[in-house]
Image 1 (tube, rainbow, N blue to C red):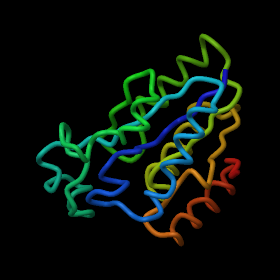
Image 2: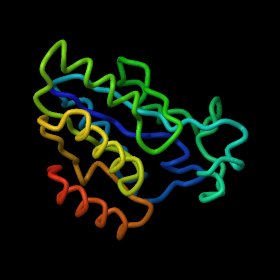
Image 3: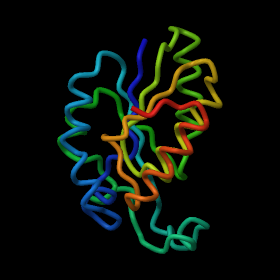
Image 4: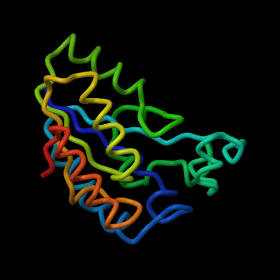
Amino acid sequence: MKVLLVIDMQNDFIDGALGTKEAVSIVPKVVDTIRGFDGLVLATRDTHEADYLTTQEGKNLPVEHCIKGTKGWEIRDEIAALLKEEPIDKETFGSVGLGQHLKELDAREKIEEITLVGLCTDICVISNALLVKAFLPQVPVKVLAGCCAGVTPESHDNALAAMKVCQIEVA
């Protein structure tokens, strides 16, 4: 089985509170990738509560975003329409729940490859790619660079380089 992980393709990261033109530009590519993918598609959703600014992350990134129940928290409509499974909510950059879910799936049916797309390359994509590698070290992990965007183009490139060093294929 092949798995595509769609990381945090949410309105706040695309054109909302933390959006960028690079994030907007990958939306059609992510849509095309999901449509053409022959395997299981899973998505994550960054999820914060109203007290976000009092959390450690909120103190370090004092921009309210992905507050549960808001439009910014929602997966972009054209991507959400393609998802067959409910997104996995995560309170922080990497999702332990996602890693555990993948490990359980692999126990039932061997996962041949895991591919990641989404936002932000330098925060949640890299965190989840490394986490997945830790949960399933023998499964090839790949990131589609053209279907990801970082906080800045430079930090996107830095994250891709870091993932390559950690034996994550960058395509």
